[in-house]
Length: 362
Image (cartoon, rainbow, N blue to C red; front, top):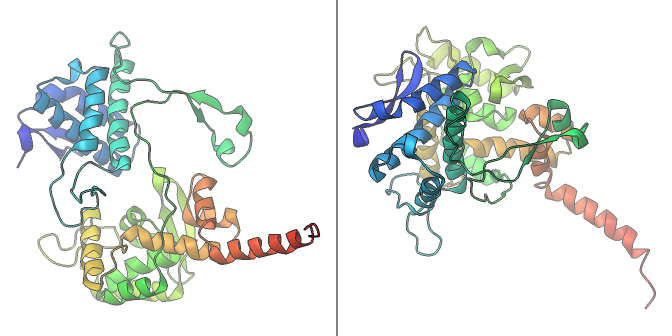
């Protein structure tokens, strides 16, 4: 049911706000069309559409039009996101530590919504420079080029504008699964399709979106390679474990429904049989199995983190780790080095051995 006469649908190949109240948010649909024209991925545009839907519904509840938004109103929206009581639902992972209540969105969710809102009003100001932008400006951030992101010419990076409309995010290291958790989760999968998906994440480090976007033609099973289209349409080739390749081959021959879809992994049953497996469908699969075996950390991305951690613990070169994981910035790869206790212990012990020679006599 469309809440407050407003929802998101894909119309003529583009995501848009629709409903009885959609007329007052035409600038939002123009912005979503602008993102599509700039070749943003469909998943990114969809995410922006739902984030702006939340903002638009909040404006309707406040009785304010999108053209009447002020900086003060945006700060009130930020407070709303931090304090909103969320409905209890399966898989919810945002809880108040103090009283166990389900309150407030996660900082990453809030910042994603605020980024969509900032982009909307930046787009409006670009179309009409005479209209003031209500998004407060923060301190300037360094904008690095591709060469600079690789560690070269970092001193030449020029400051760029940054929105002050954001909350501080806790910096957490990626958590991989313990061996017993991995065995339990993988042992719960029953279909060849699900085991193939898990194998590509665990042994090739693919993201959820990368697995779902794979086409049959992207796999070179005899040679053991996968052609991956990652974030921002960045392409890379990663090795494929022979056992995973054999699973995928069995899936193609035995389980994959007859379909004209080019995607590799399809819905196996129900009214959508033969259609591409969706992100929501993948989350449902993992939610069922992690609850079934009691591995609460068994989310799809946890398998990718397990892969990255294994590479770091094996002493893989940082540049190789970056290439295999498809990280745009090497800092993302460094986080996995921090998770390699054997190497940390070895370096620590070596340093302590040298330090013993420096001790002053007592």
